[in-house]
Every structure is written in structure tokens, then in C-alpha cells.
Length: 171
Image (cartoon, rainbow, N blue to C red; front, side, top):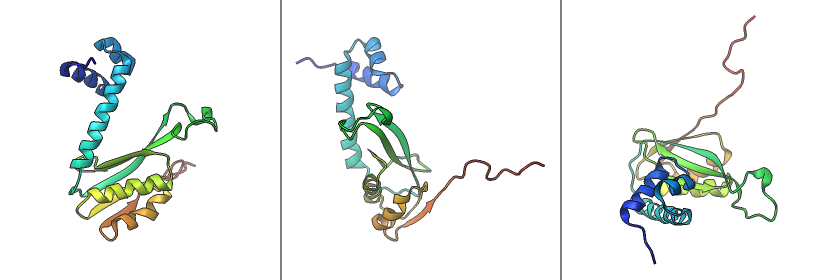
């Protein structure tokens, strides 16, 4: 079985980290796209294991959590009932320490109560000190922060108002 040399693997990963697509990386490195995708999955699995093992007993002060929308495979308007539930809209839940920019936990999934529960509980397991946690107004955060952290959290929700709020009318 052929294996890539370490310097070639580093070139491929560096290209992807710079934001290049798989096909662009294929053209630049001469490595087939299937090999690039396998290396990407292998590297991602390694990083997930590393993060899971080392991101424990963290001393964070101010943690902000939010969700980022993305889609897998196709946008919702093209998803059929017969398609896999993983297709369509997905959300990346991210927690970040305000001071150090450390990301102690992230979760990818649908924007549901179940995904929110998993995300908040993972965060609580990794933090070893009292934190101030700030989220957006997503309703499921209210339900799960107290259950996961108990009294060891100062929890706030920041709700943004858009439109003409805050603007004075001119006569």
C-alpha cells in the first residue's frame, strides 16, 4: 500500500488550512483528491482524540457560546424526505474563552434541544472553575446550563435587536 511521505502530508494539510479547496490542493500538490479526503478525515479524527484527551480541567473565566450555520451536501430546499438526516442545515456550536481564544468544545449537529444538551454538558465536563457563560437567546440554553453547571456558573444571554431600535427618528 502506498503512503504519503510526512512532508507531502504536511503540504496537503497546510494547503487546506490556508483555505484551499480539495481540488486546488490536488493541483498544487499532485496528490489525488481521494487521498486528500482520507488524510483530512484521518487528521480530523486524530485532532478530535487529542482535543478530547487534553482539553480537561480548564480554567476559563469568560466563555462565549454561539452557533454557526452551515449545510452538508445540499441546502434545505433541495433535501428530500428520502435523504439522510445529516444532509441539509447543520450548526456548529462553539464555546470560546474570551481572553485566551481557546475553544474548549464544539459540536456539529442540528439546532435542536438534543444537540444543545450535548454541547453544554461537554463544556461543563471540561471546565474546572466557575465561569461566566454568555450565549445568544436560543431557548434551549436556558434549560440546560443550570442542569449542567449547577451553581458554578454566571449565565447571561445577549439578545440583539435589529431594525430601528436604538435609532432616533428625525422630524
